[in-house]
Amino acid sequence: MHSVVIKEVKLHTINVSLKAPFTTSFGTMKDKEVCLVEVIDESGHSGWGETVTSDEPYYNEETTRTAVYMLNDFLVPRLIKKEIKHPRDVHRMLSFVRRNQIAKAALETAVWDVFSKKNEMPLYEVLGGRQKKIAVGKSIGIQSSPDELVSKVGQYVKEGFQKIKVKIAPGADIEYIKKVREAFPDIILMADANSAYTLDDIDHLKQLDQFNLLMIEQPLAHDDIIDHSTLQQNITTPICLDESIHTYEDARKALKLGSCKIINIKIGRVGGLQEAIRIHDLCKEHNVPVWCGGMLETGIGRSHNLHMTTLSNFIIPGDTAPSSHYWNQDIIQEDITMEEGFIQVPAGTGIGSEISAEALNDKLVSTQSIVDDHSVHPIPS
View 1: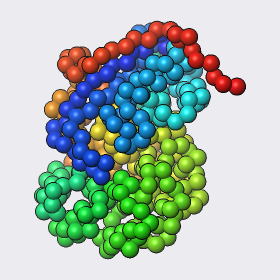
View 2 (view 1 turned 90 degrees about the vertical axis):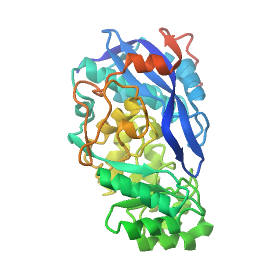
View 3 (view 1 turned 45 degrees about the vertical axis):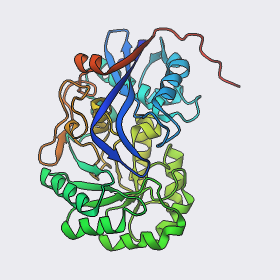
View 4 (view 1 turned 180 degrees about the horizontal axis):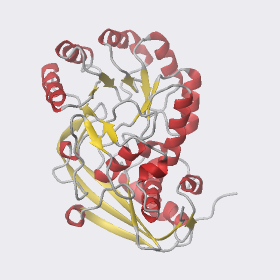
């Protein structure tokens, strides 16, 4: 394969408004400011990545502004003018920075895209994926009442979504799930707690076992692995870890401790596609299924998710719902659409989704262009 040399990186900060507010145990989101990372190689190809951040550090420690700062001051200077023989090397090249996984992933995924385009291959082939269409699930935020939730679930079941994920929190959990299960006894249903509970809630969470859920996602603290092991021993519903898994090592330890039976792999949370592949392969070795959760991405991040989920152990429908479910206008030229519960992996080279110059200009807050290493910060010995 042909290597790439990065000539320029542009950081496009945009503001996008959701079609409807999305509520979780963290709070309610109405719009997002994200950074689209454009990597331009010496041949003029552009690759795109996205910071799956928001304005506040409620999911992890990062915000869009901190991600842009890390990209501009630390991460991009390490790659500019460098020959990259394969994008899997980028994870190592950026490893001198601790955490800041979303910022790293935005840059690393853009390199995967430009590398794939340079080599005239779709991204999924470079990743080693095979599936051409991806089963789709739908994530539903916390609703005002159980009946309102049942109505929402009914709408999305009718549209053909193959898995329904319901956000829960204390006071909006057991009765809500009970109502949904009574109305839809056969659907694939899961609950996502976003760290809303503690071990003091074991008896309460045991009540979920009666509803035949596919999983309960991240019920305990966002940085916990040990207490989830205790909880998993006391409930029959499989636990899925999300926020706790930032690296391959986190996943290895969680599996060794029996802290979960499923892992949600988000590209941004684990620092990029290379680490996502390593976690995928580890889980496959242990017969632990994986799936891809959503971070309210634009079409750029959504396209990367689709290509990643072509890997063989992504056997649970992800949260990559069509663009129209989130945005009045996406940032890409052609919306990502669903047919009969599946989304076709975008065709063409790279991620297969082209940026819409009109949409970018309409939503643009600012653009930074980086063409040199602007005095790279020394790495401590």
